[in-house]
Amino acid sequence: MPEESFASGFALRLNSAILEGQANAGSAVIDDPLAMFTNPATAILHERAEIALHGVGLFPVTKFRGTTTNPLFPPIIDKANSHNAAKSALIPSMAFVIRPHDQLSLGVVGTSPFGLGFDYGKHWGGNRYVVQSNLKTINVTPIAALKLNDNFSIGGGVQIQNSGARFTSQTASPNPLAQFLFQESGTRQKAKVHRWNVGWTAGILFQPTPSLKIGFSFRSQIRSTLRGFLTFTNVPPVFKENLFLQASRVKTKIKFPSVFTLSTSYDLTPEWTALADITRTNWSSIKQIVLSTPLDPLAEIIQQKWKDTWFFGAGINYKQSDKWVFRGGFAFDQGPSRTKYRVPGIPDSDKYIASLGATYIFNEECHFSFSYVHEFFRKAGVNLKNSNIGNAGKGNLKGHLRTHVDYIGLQINYKI
Image (cartoon, rainbow, N blue to C red; front, side, top):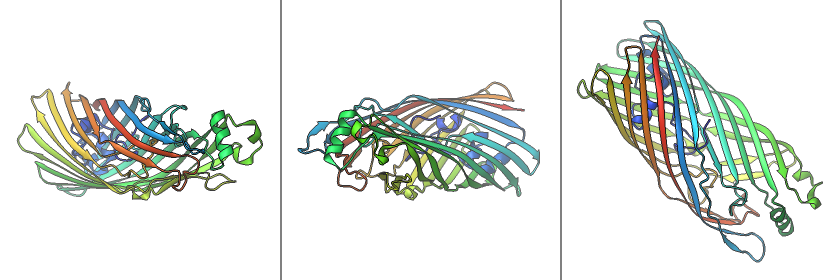
């Protein structure tokens, strides 16, 4: 499961080596079973039963450079430089599709559409804002697609998603004495929550000519109230009986965003195919993240105020022979966060994506695909202030985040 976030916000676009190799261009029109997650109508492109197994290895680097101001009096400015907070990870996905009738296809896709994971270390200067942040999702989507005629197909499905999150930080307090004791004792708080929820997905596939495909799809918002426990460690003896520092139940609400995707592919020649993708992700549903306990409905407030984002991708495929297909792509992915509210626990920013890939056609039934991707993140400014809502006792944190990511994907497709 993911240990980083490599699309805008905390979204992931890592469920197919074929799509990764062409910068996710054509995600709603290609005939890979894993593309059913983006557009369930693509299931109708498969005339035989087919299974796809995919895994991608992530090798990220995220570092913070800047300063923190201690909230105690007199305020002291310290460096808050971090080591690499992002960890390598392996993300799997799978899909299966069958064609029980000429006009009907059924399938299921299992993938991880959202995720992040960072560990800045308990001694990091910005530890009052975050020490560790982690989000993992498992999404299983059964789908059905119907061929209306030779040009139009439609599809739909139900998203069944398990979401789990973990957040750790140095305990902060606007009370100077309490803040001093928390810092001296290394008092930390850890929230761990999870929940199952459902959403839906639908799509259209239009093939006006044998050379041209156009796909449009929509994935619904998934509203989730995650529930779990909040615990504290290294509490100073004088606060051992404090009710607000006891283990308790905790909950938080997350609105996983809805997504619109428009894709196309066009066969320029029998060997060359051009692909493009435009995606809008409605991140404005994320206003703030609030941790609530029975005693304190505002135990932790993390302001976000995200904006909706656009993704633009273009790719090319070259069929070199009956055995090999080579591909490449380039994309721009807009980040939803803003400097005033950007937190190191979700170090998102605009990024450019360059990719290469290939498919080896072993025989008519079995194909192997490979991808390599590099993501160039823009420098992301951070300017969090002690006076902002939810930041009392945390001090100021000012600086920037630098991130770059490499990942390698492998996939096998087998027709039954």
